[in-house]
Length: 129
Image 1 (tube, rainbow, N blue to C red):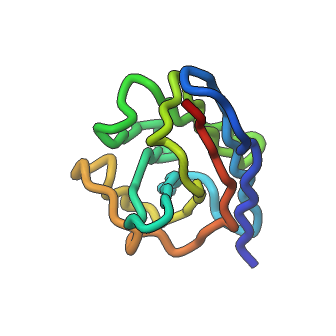
Image 2 (cartoon, rainbow, N blue to C red):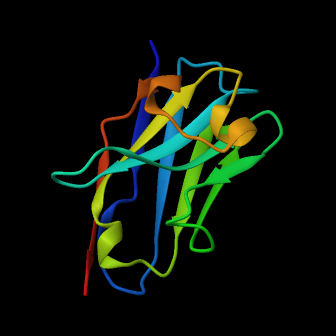
């Protein structure tokens, strides 16, 4: 059974930082696509960042480029999302997602939730001004 367990959310002031973690189990972690999505109330789910665990290639949405960094620790089957210079508009529920061996975000620069078959329960990030 695949499980993705997120942690690290919380409340910070604008300009602050948070690091989200996503630990994967029951899933062939290596050489697959892992990503982070977010959804704010009343808005559609947005792909934020993705990483191909086989080589480390990454994708970022324009809205977070230069502020967020996705990384991996293969020994721990864990993906991280380091979020710096947080803005109130970053407030959302953040979800970790796992996909297959073809990583659309990295290959095509387009992140679609339909390409990810496994999802975590989400962790809330709240940024106050």
